[in-house]
Image (cartoon, rainbow, N blue to C red; front, side):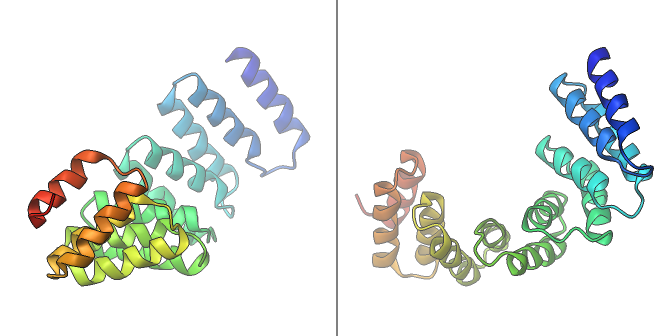
Length: 202
C-alpha cells in the first residue's frame, strides 16, 4: 500500500486540480488489500474533490452494492444519478439496493429508467421481474421475463421464472414447456424438480 499510495500521489500531481481519478484509483488499491472501509472513504473523498462529477459517488455506490451494503450504496448511487450518471449499470444497482431496503416502488422506478437507457440490456428487465415475483404479480412477471428472454434467449433462470408465472396463471402446459427449456439450458435441477412437483408432472 505504501508503493500504491506513492503511485496515486504521482498520478494526482499530473492531473488537473479537481480531477478525482487518483482517489478512485486509491480506492481500487485499497479494495485489493481488502481494506473496504478505507476504499469507500477514498471514493467519498473523490466525490468531494470533484463535486460536479458522478464518478466518485458512482464508484462508491457500485462497490458498496457489490459488497452487499445496500444502506451505504443507495445514497451514493442516487447522488451519482443526480450528478448526471445515466447508464444501465448504475440504474440497475440503485434498483437492487432499493429493493433490498424494502422500497419496491423506488426499485421499479430505477429499473424502468435503466431499461430505457439501454434497450438491449436484460438486467433491468430481470430486476422488474424480481419485484413482480415479490409482489405475487404473475402476469407482470411473465411479461418482464419475456423481455429478458428476448434479449438473452439462453438465460435459464428467466425460463424458470416464466414457468412459475405461467403456473400461477393456470397455464400448466406452457409452464411445463418452460421447465423443459430451462432444463435444456442447464438450469439447476432442484428448482426444476420443485416446480414439476407443484405442477404434478414428472
